[in-house]
Amino acid sequence: MFNLISRWFDGRTEQTGGGGTTDWVMWAILGGLLGLFVVMIFLQRRRQRGAMDNQVAMLDRIRMGMRIKTVSGVVGRIKEIREEFGGSKLVLIETGNDRNSSFIQLDINAIMEVMPESTESTHSPEIPVVEEKSVPTEPIEEFNAAEFVEKSNATRKRKPKTQS
Figure (spheres, rainbow, N blue to C red):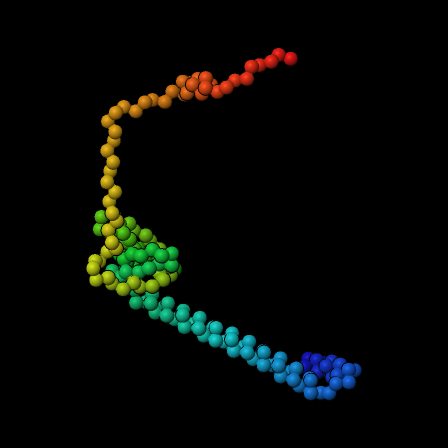
C-alpha cells in the first residue's frame, strides 16, 4: 500500500515538475502528526487508569461509620455495607442529624469521596425548627358559590339586548 501511495505522489511531482524533497517533507509531517496523536491517546489512557485506581483504592478503604459524599452531593454516615448476589455492594447511609435523620441505600460506586471527620459534632448541623402558628379562633366564613355568582353578575355591566 505504501508503494502505491508513493508511486502516486511520485507521478504527481513528475507532472508538476517538482523535486522529490516535497514528498519527504510531507511524509515527515504526516508521521509526526500520527506519532503525536498516538502519544496523546497513550497519556490520556494512563491518566484515566490512575484515576480509576485511586477510586478503587478509596472504595476498598471504606468502613462503617465513615462520612462520605455521593456523586449527587448527598453527605452522610455509612451505617451498613452489604454484598449482594453477583458481587455488587450496597451501602446504607444515614443523612441528617439526631432528631431528623433518614436512610438511603445506594450502590457503592455512587460514593465520590470520603469526607474528613468534623471536630465540632459527629452529625451534620441541626435543621432549625419552624414554630407552629396558632390557628385563628374566629370562625371562617363558608364559601357559597351561588351567592358569589349572583354578586359578580350584579356588578357586571350588562348591555341591553336588541331584537333584530
